[in-house]
Length: 253
Image 1: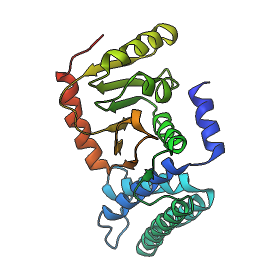
Image 2: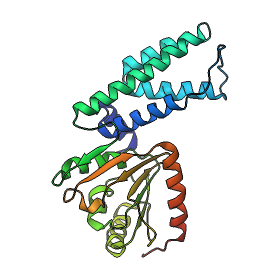
Image 3: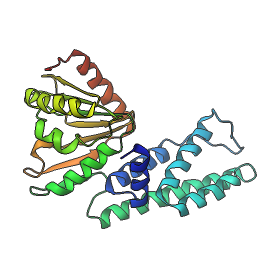
Image 4: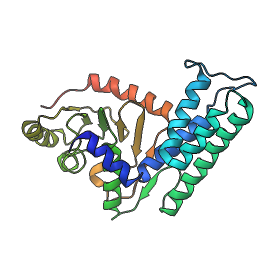
């Protein structure tokens, strides 16, 4: 299946809880970090105001066609009615946040992430697979107890165009067997390193998305755990920390 077809199918299926969590997080961040707008139009491309409007427009468009139409209608009036139009867009963001919260609540989830009890293995599997499948360029797994079976379950079907980096510890030799066979059959770009410095259990997706887990991936369904998206600034900081650890880590292959 090509990446383009994969994205089309995903779009037709609609957003699941993983995507809704990320949209909710990004809309909250946008509302909290909105730049000062003043009383006069600021529409130059490089300005924080225009960049904010572009980001918010993209996020609202992702939620629904109705949200997209509402935003575009307000955007078209910005030059003439700057302040009222900005207030309208702020209101649209607030409404979208509440809508996503309600949808997650109706789906049996909270607005900060998902929790999984013992035996809830399928829901965790589906959600973590959805996180991995969001990637367009790179996935980094940080889990000291990640093993070969976890690789086979969650990473083996990722797009061959996505770079996969695994930072593990105890079961690195076990993972290496799976990685070598996967590389040989599918010519995938998978890197594995082991380190004793690992404390968190994280999944990094592309450049600004990260999810933290309450336990090792291999124990999902046996023990209670959670899957929570990290705020962008925390995700970037965590990524930098584990990039440095990656460079210090050794390859078991």
